[in-house]
Structures are given as structure tokens and as C-alpha cells.
Length: 433
Image (tube, rainbow, N blue to C red; front, side, top):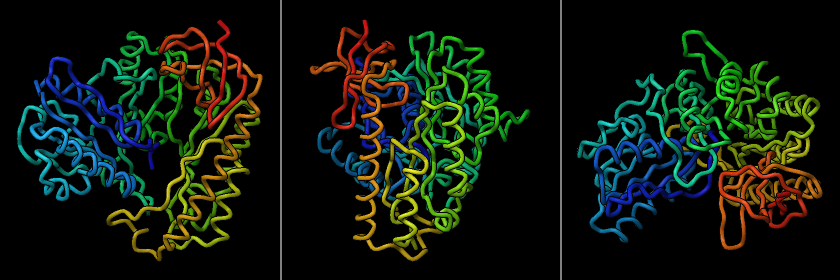
């Protein structure tokens, strides 16, 4: 499962156009790709259109996308509605049958400039045949102070709960020189913090001629693009972190001390039934070993509650993992049946039990986050300012804590600040300027 983000974001595409926008659901990779879509649609002269880039990771994400399509048609009855993304790739018939939809594009087609010059109602080919991860260089990301660098796409693993390999195709890596060129372009346009993203980024390099590991890419990126002040990594599989990457995370201050881990569960039998590649002990040891070398590191994780066959005791092991790994930031998902996946054919946990476990796990996460934020009182931090609103500035610290920041600051700046407290899951800090 990739690093999913809640809700959707909307990008206005062109002031010259009467109304064309991109609505993005899902992960950071989708966010990056929406910028490519924006670029391609502008080049094709598309206007008066609404493009919806969907997510398929859960049934709820798909429901929200369909709801957005219907709402867009009600609000804009004459606009051209184009739908693309993971949900379209895995279930094109559903979207093609929606009366509100004018055109659908698959995950490969949405990145093809030529696709946006066509009015063919359905352009969805076999994603399993796609072997290229390259995409046009983008100038920036609309409305975002943090740059996203795509380094990989697709997945060769088949976790039993996950539909994403069928939506994204095989694992394929962006060549290092392309990543470097993209980073330099974004740095030249003022970005100071970067996040590497993909579907399974620790699989990076296996398909390239020289078989570089992700650690090799990170080392080269930091060496050849010194303008990068802060580097973050999206979801990591603890079983695939190569030794060089581990050493860089432990020792290089430009790599931010926050890692989001794709853990999913804390019970070995459930992990086996999920077809995950790590064990409970491996996850705990990874966190412990890294924390011993870099004490300020913080961890987040994806966790699924109510996976098929999960017992109370097995769920208790997942709850306990939060403390044993020292997780401060949780993304909690109720298990969601995905089409044609093995887990969908396993004995299901009753919905009321699943709902209760989600609530327990989220409450555990809220407590862990509160304890982490409370311990930050009086500390110094460097905050990336991301937005300025009527109540002040907001951004994220080095440990990825959300921050409300006082002082005279500007979007995109990295500001030294003193933490004075916390409320509602966010730190309160005052700029030292």
C-alpha cells in the first residue's frame, strides 16, 4: 500500500481557460502525476474540463471519486469530465458507464501527451505491459511548498489485500539522471524540501542495467544536487532497506528524521496471510537499531484493522506494536475488500468488530502522537512554512509534526523556531527571527 493521503486536492489549471481543473485523490505519486496531467492538458489546449485522478486503495476512496464526478457534473453541466487514475485502470467499465463521464484514461495514458489531444471516449490499455517509468519534467507543484520527486512506479509484489499492482503494473525505476534533472529544475524554481515517492520505492533499481539500490540513488542525489536542504522518503518496506540507505538515514542531517513505514499489522500470522515480507520482530528491530544511531528519529506507519481472520489476540499484537516500535504518526485503515484479491476470498471480520478495532487503533495513535508532541515542548526546530492563513502560518517540522507558527514568515521558507506547546495534534511554535 502506498502512502495514502486523505481527501482530494484541486489544482486550477490555467487562468486563460474558462474552467479547467484537476481533482486528485490518493497518494503523493498521484499528486506528482496530476502535475504532469496539468502540463499535458495545457499543452493540448484543453479548456472547460474537469479531470479527476482517482485512487483505488480502498472502497471509500473509490466512493469519494464517484461522488466528486457527480458533484462536478451538477455544478458544471457543460464541462468535459475526464476520469483517470488507479480506479479507472482497475475498473474502467464502471466509469465508462457513468452518464456524467465524457472520457476515461488509464494510468499509462494519463502521462502520455498524445492522449490529451484525442477525444476517444476510452483509452485504457494493459498496464502490465508498461515498462517505462519516465515522465516529462515538471516545473513545480501547484500550491505546494514541498517538492515531490517520482523515483519509481508499479509493484512486483502481491500482498493479498492490495489491488495497486493491478492498477500500476510492474515495478519500474526512473533512471538516476532523470531524477537528478528533475531535482535540479525544482530546486532552481525555489523548492528547498523534497520527498521521494513511488509505489514501492525500496524496490528501486532492480530493473535498471546497473541495479542500483535506493541508497545509491539517495547518495547521488544529495551529492549532485546540493541545493536540496531537506530530503524525505515516502513509505518504506523495512525488509528492503539497503545498508547504504540505512547508514544515510542514520547519519546524514539533510535526510529528515521521520520515516513512514509500510507495516500493515503487528501479528506474524496476519503478516503471513497478507503476504508481507517482514516479521513483527524485524519491524521492532529496525526501529530500535535506527533510533540507537539517530535518537531524534520518529516513525509513522500504515496499519490495517480488521484484516480477514484477525482474532482479538492478533489485533492486540498490532496495538502493542505502536509502543514497541515507538510509532508517533499512524495512518489507520479499516480492511477494505478489493476486487480479485486473495484476501477478499478469506473469512471476513464482522463490520462492527472491524469498526471497533479501527476506533481503538486510532485512539492509540492519538495518544502516541500527543505524548510525542508533549515531549517536544521547549525544543528547537526548523519549520517548512507551507501556508499562511488568517490565523497565522502552518507547516511541518523536521520530524514531520504539523506546526502552527507565529512570527513574520513566508511560504517556502525554512524557519528556526522554538516549540511552546501543542494543541489538536499540532505543535505551537514561535519563529526565532
